[in-house]
Amino acid sequence: MLDLHITYKGGMLMEIRRIVAIVMYLLIMGSIVYFATLNLRENVEIKRQYTRVLETKELLFNGAVFIVAISIVTLLFSLLVKKEKTHMISAILLAILMYLSFYSLYSLCEMMRCTRYFVPLVLINTILWLMVIILRGHELVQYVHEVLLVGTGTLTGIIMATVIPERLLIALLLFLSIYDIISVRVGLIKLLMDKTLSKIHEEHLEGSIIKTLDLRDPISLATAYVGLANIGIGDIICYAIMMSMYGISFGEGFSILALMTIVVGSLALYYLMRKYEMKYAPGLPIPIIISLALYFLLKFYYS
Image (cartoon, rainbow, N blue to C red; front, side):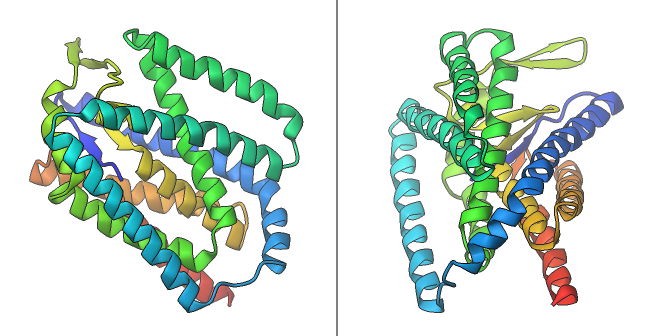
């Protein structure tokens, strides 16, 4: 899970730009989730009627397998960072991101019964990824990368929310929030940030920052540069899962309510980072806890 990284520079205008950009990106994610759940909710409800509910033992087993897998990946990546092999991490991340990008498009088209759009969407997706790889030094590529990252993360979150049982999703979100804290404070993300923070290419031109995408840098590759802040792909996926859970469980309009809780949580995190002058912080715990708390209250109310 990657972090929410804030660069503290500029005056009040910069502060406003940061906040507006973060909110706008979350609004884009919320809009995608909303329109997807308009078409997906009925299909998901039908599917759940014929899907066997996992027992507690099965949930615990699946959770244990996931924790072991995360631990192995974290250990492997930590060793690569210590051996100055971050470019290998970037290559793995790039392959994973491209796979998720195409797979999420296919799965969503299949679920929404609009597979005729899959081929043109794949062609557009392929062109965008080729631009990122071939023209990586161009300023425009930074924006293309952000579109791909936000789109991939949002679609992946929607697909996960539709195929994974609710209890397992909640456990997953809570586990990843805890993992995010540990990783940012003492784990893999801290190692990566310490290694790459000094290498982030920024230029200040009339109060703005232009950031160059570096495919060899895992942080640059796996984070969307949003309003002078970096929001990680893991955060984007989990936010989309949370919004999709609201839309599927209570109705598509409730995905906007989930969006509001995530916005409040993100702004609260931003305030704490400003107050304590933190260079980077876990982007999951505060938004996810606030959103889950309201989710449980709604489940209790409608039960």
